[in-house]
Amino acid sequence: MKQQIFLLPLLLLSSANGFVTPSATSSTRQHVIMQPIISSSSLKLGSFDEYSQTDPDQDLAYEDTLIGTTDGVAMEGKFVTVAYKGQLMSNKKVFDEGQISFRLGDNKVIKGWDRGLIGMKVGGKRILKIPPQLAYGDRGAGDVIPGGAHLQFDCELKGIASNAMEEKMAEASSMNPSKVFFYVFVAGSIIYDVLKYQMHVI
Image (cartoon, rainbow, N blue to C red; front, side, top):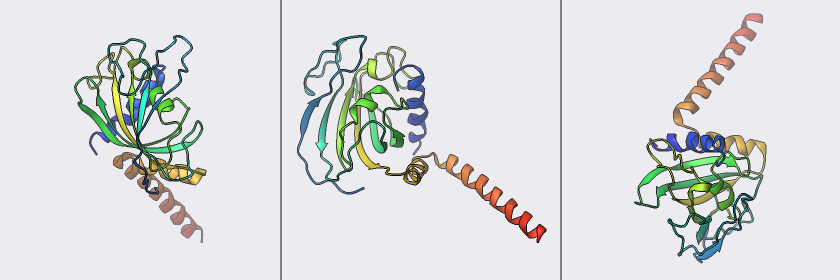
């Protein structure tokens, strides 16, 4: 859980830089290439297996390793919960893993995630290969992700919230334990003060 603390603020910071459960039974592997959405350049499309870390025009690519079997499909505007493991493609070094909940398309995560998770079904697993221009660019992220890094994420779509209550529950389940404790403590203090006041009035 130590590393889980890192990615959430890291992903949120990336947006400022202009980037940011039913079981599944099918094991069919699919190679799919995302269509480019960046207007500033015409990115070259290639297959998942032919992904090039030396091509400056390399686009996002993904591979479904497990297809979800539910009706829930990730799309822009949906509030999703994703379990992930991120590693540098250059040396396979894992820099973070954990679980995070967010709304797709709100620029709360890197663009490679906003684009690459579209179309997943709950319970499905997908490998994302993300070029720097859809991740942390030439600046990187601290000492963990160097500038110009190509990233690979192993993702599993754990759930899609269908209402505001489920969204809040998903956020709480993905929260840092110390933050959860803080909110519980504050809520408990407020409830205690309210009850104490009511007893005093009575």
